[in-house]
Image (cartoon, rainbow, N blue to C red; front, side, top):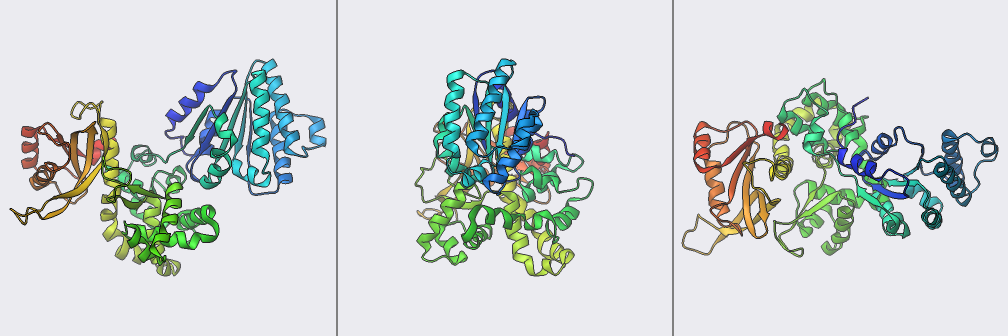
Length: 481
């Protein structure tokens, strides 16, 4: 069994709520992100009734919930006559909370995958709200946790319903960052840990599928590309579970974005969605489910036309790029050939964007205010936009310029940088290009700090020039130090 990794901040927030006051906690996030593991860790040593629902009938769910109550406190009468409805179940829980108050402790009640309960019993949310009125009036030490992994259903039944107003804490549990994901592979090089995060994203369950005693290449072939493995089918299951009858259209839309389409019209064309304007509803839903991102240049307004679409998760990016597109050969068990000819030659290009850039931005966020080489304040993002085209001096022609890492303190550009995931050492031309582009970025000043990230390091010439100009140099190893 793997060690429990990260989630210290979430655990701290939950522990701070512990006491004799009533609490209602909402916890949601995509499947496999680690909600149940977090709840189990928090529940250790606490009086707890924990129930994980499924898609069964209301009567079956009540029977299983009765068993969980009996596991907390045996009751021969309840064992002989299981709970008949949720009104009765909630009344029984309320009696246990009153008993807990008399015994001077709180009672943790967890309803995991709550949307399944709300679907089978539509009035359940209202019934819980009524019980919470009694809890508040009597100041009972109920610590109620409602959790769910189908984000759309959780939003419908909880975040847009009466229970949302009762919450004392709530959070969508995010995937792990690159540093925390790297803890699953402590013996690997920094570059391979970053590659693993690029392929798997930050979902703990996906990271647990890989064998840290084997190589990255072995794991890609035998844990992702091989038919029958969990990660060979997981993307299909995720989309179909969330999006149901229109899953095939959504799969095509995600596939279009994964293949490089970034604008709505281009996505609609590649996905075969007509008219192109109708693609907006699919993109909006995928964004709401955090499957796609719509990102804009730093400081661009919400309605900026410069925004682009991308797949939000490393595993989904990899699956659509390398598994879905090679399904015929993978089904025929030609894994070594697919990996050798179609995956390995393109893997580092896949890692370079957006995974390495995202990791460098995350590192910059951590470094600002803590590393003296970085500014003390700044909001981190990326920037792109028109800049003068140096190929046509003396004209008004422009080209698209891009700075992969920027940080703004108000209107001031306090940092600008590039992330170079390339073979060999980064040379002075990278700094020359950065200096030429950054002058055209809004908010630039001579005091703007410059930073370069590299996979393998820097040439002596660049290191000398960086020292003379106070340019910050960091490698992928520094990301994990």
